Image (cartoon, rainbow, N blue to C red; front, side, top):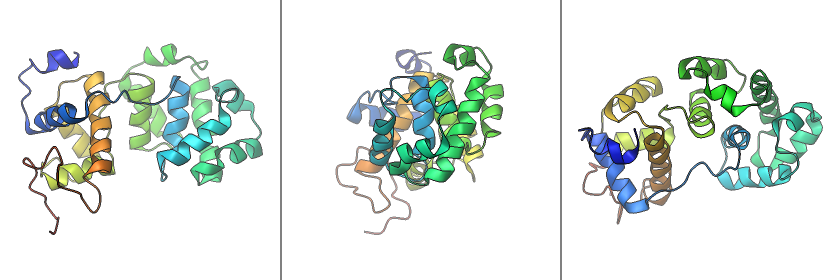
Length: 226
């Protein structure tokens, strides 16, 4: 189901209304900013606990010749650490990248081969991979392999808390709730996550800038002191 179809599906939930409002403000953000599925995978590891500007510097160190699974698989650890140093936690992340690349090797580094397998199986395999938590797994599944899985992160939690939308007590419950409230669509999940992150950076910050926020009239501003 594409987003044009989803508007006809009768899914006029509060959460879907939030999506529509954000999309009207920001449009199509064309996420994830990567040229290959493997670049998405690398970015999903490197972005842990750091800003994307730092990730981009690390990716630039690997581009254009070394940002390939086969190359990183055989790259000496010290060379990889040096390349990804701008992203921080470089010792841990080098280990995580090696583990994730080893997982990808089981599919002969072929994204289409990965896509032929069920979402549930792939998610379980990724979660069993060192350094891959729920958010990272869902980033990879959605943006690298076009699997319909809703991403829940700190920005999602903040948005749902402030509106508020009672979605659950933990990220697993929140994910289940959000997927029940939205059409099952890779395109929609892709766009919605990008929109949530963008609005969180523009307005719904830890110390929010509520003026001119597209959700100002819909938001109860829970926990915000003026």
